[in-house]
Image (cartoon, rainbow, N blue to C red):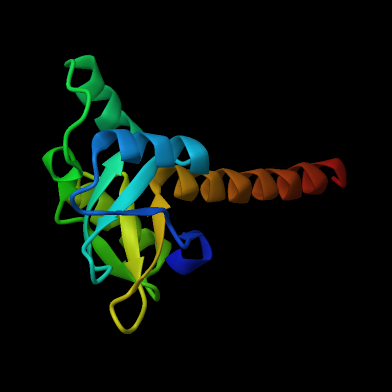
Length: 138
C-alpha cells in the first residue's frame, strides 16, 4: 500500500512569523493535532504539534513565534512511498509525522504514526474475521 492512501490531504499550514496564540487558535478551530509551518512561497520548513504547544505553555511561555517551537527540517516522502518505507523513515528520524510531497515537491499531505496504526488495526481486524469464518466452517 502506498502512503498517499493514508495521508491527511491539504494539511493545515501556518506561515513563519506567526505567533503561538495564532497556531493554538487555528489548531482548535480546525480540530487538528499538528500544523505545518510554511514560508511565504508555501515551502514547508517545520511542524508544530499540540504537544509542542503544551510543553511551552507549561513553561509559562504564552506567545512566541512559531520558529521558536517548531520542529525544523521536517521529514518528507514522495507520494509513491510504500507504508513500510514510511515506517522505517519515521523510526530512523524518530518522528511521528511525515510530510508527503507530489512530483513537483509540493506538499500534498501529512501522515502520522496514528494513521498508519489505524490502517494496520483495520487490516488485522479483517484478517481476524477471515480466520473466525474459516474456523466456524471446520
